[in-house]
Image (cartoon, rainbow, N blue to C red; front, side, top):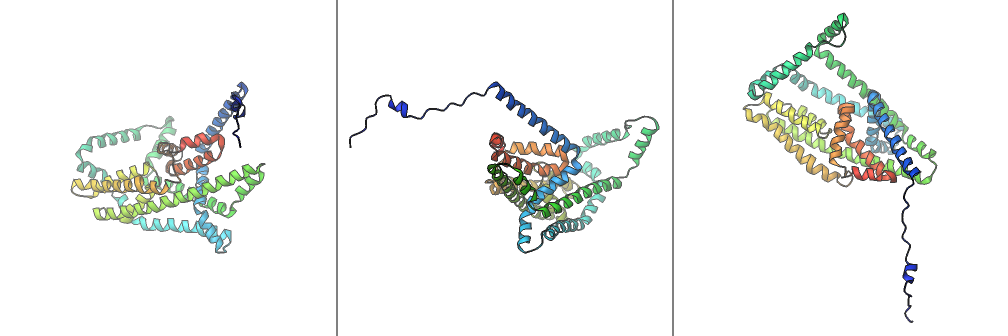
Length: 377
């Protein structure tokens, strides 16, 4: 068969035409800017509302996160032919029993350390002479702040000042305990009803969406969020348990005593990225100063705690979560500080899951994919 000869210039006709994307018009650019501006205002409004209504928003959000964690457990109970309300009640009561048991086990050691608080500051000042000047300055600053009159004049200001000065420490602690207990009760009630409702919210959302592609996208996003967060929180809980056991053993070997208290403290603090381990180092250092002799032994518990945290936080946990959680560590740090400012310790705990949820949603929605790429490592 003779070769086919292509005339000169014919390849230009046969080659696919290069598609050039048309430049957006002025109206399209204005529409995009308007969308970004309105979205920014909506985000700021949601943040302001979340900050103002933190007492109700935070427990409900925490309940939704816990729902993602315990959803696999709920499915196992349902496969055992338990009614869904009974399965949800078992999960909630198990959480309550866990908290009550830990409180009963830790009440005695915590009471012992609280009773030592009046002697803690003089002991530290005696052990470390270098800190005597800053401690005296701190005491003077605290006395100056306590002596300041509150806003308001005359008898009203004096009455408020007398009330503030007359409030004992135990009453302040009791007030905080009641606040935490109220938030925990709201979280457990919300968790129960979310577990009982099952996937009702997702089903209703899919039903009202107009296009099949959008329905499938919402289901995929929901499934990915549930799978990734369940694996993340289960892995973090497992590693925190190892950290707690190792820290309790180290505290017992160093002579701090109460290994259950120190292990539980390390377990809980490790849920808060950056801030938790930093606070743990300070607590172990102060405990060493108060308890251990000679002076160099005071640095041993904090140093060993740092080694445990580095081994867990910088090697083992990143290796286990490398394929699912590839978020920018700088954004994790910024998120921890931001949500701590918004919602306190619980906000710092939720910072990483919220960042992960944001990345999953952005990766699945085409216009937001650049944001998801920016959040990634």
